[in-house]
View (cartoon, one colour):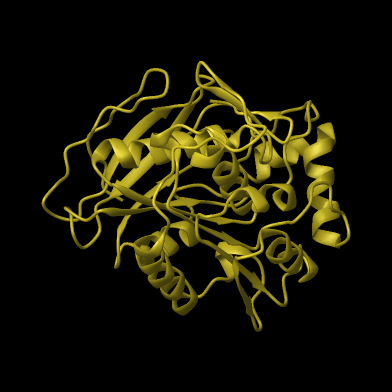
Length: 308
C-alpha cells in the first residue's frame, strides 16, 4: 500500500488533495466534528475525473488495512474512486469505538473529504457495524432533515447490518456483547482485536437502523444480507426493507457475515448498483421535513440531535 500526501482538516472541512494521473493511493488524516483523527485513504479509480466516489465503512474490529477491506476496495475501484478509512478506536485512527454511535461523525468526515476532492456524487457502502452507520448517517444527513450538503450521500448500501440495537439472539452476538460491555472483554478487544472500545454505555441511545431507514428516502437504498449470517438472521434485513418501503433487498444464498463473506462477484454487483443508482436519484430538495427544526447548523430527527 503506497503512502501519498497527507492532509488534515480543522473542524469539519478537509483540504482538497490533488488527484494523481495514475491510480496511486493517497492518505490523509481527517478531523471529525468532535475532534477525533481518522486515518483515511483515497484511490481515484479508473477515471481520475469521475464524478462518483464510493466510501467504504468497515465492520467492528475492521480497518482500512484489513485484507478483506482492501479486497472490497480493490473491486470497487474498478468502477469508481474509493475512500476507505478506519473508524475511531480502530487501526491508526484516534479515539475509542462507540460501536456505531459517534461513528457517524467519522463517516461524515470521509464523505466531506470525497466532496472536497471534487466528487459530486457519493455512495456509502457499509458492512455490519458500518452498515448501521451508513443507514443512520443517511437518515441524519438527508436534505429532507436539515443535513449539511457536503455530508449528504446519493445512494446507500448496507451489507449484513443489524435492524435493532442490543441484539443477543445468536452466540456470536453474545460474545461481542461481552467484549463491548465487560472490562475483560474490552481488554481482549484492545489486545487481541486491535480495537479500543469506549467503556461507557450510550447516553442517549442513538436512532436505531430500523428507525433510520424510513428517513432515508428518496435516496436510493440497497440492503444486502446472507442467509447464513451467524450474527444477524434474515429477519433483520427483512425488517429493514419493510421499514424503508422502497429499498431494494438482496438475500444472498450461502453468504455469511459482512466483508469477510462477500465474494468478489457480489462486491462487483454492489459496485455496479452503486454506479447506476445515483444517476436515477431524485434531485436534492431544499424543503425541510415537517417537525424538523434547523438552527445554526443543527437539527433534530425523531428526537435525536444531529451531531453536525
